[in-house]
Length: 99
Image (cartoon, rainbow, N blue to C red; front, side, top):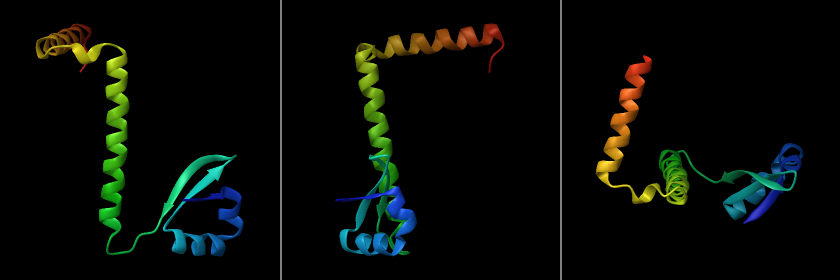
């Protein structure tokens, strides 16, 4: 995978499109750090490409949430424990007038 700077992206778009055509995906950097992904697509595959990207992002977010829960010991809660926490939160919300 090739990297291009944000400055290159702005000042040399033709060069970037040529690289993208050859490499199929590029990482755009800003201040030396990854900032965005450029990926080749087509009108016929755009919806599918976006769906795959969104699934990958969701999977990554879910992994982060699970890791955070595990670090807090929440992965050991039983279904009964979870339901009790939900009941308590709902009760507290009703008592304070929240929705």
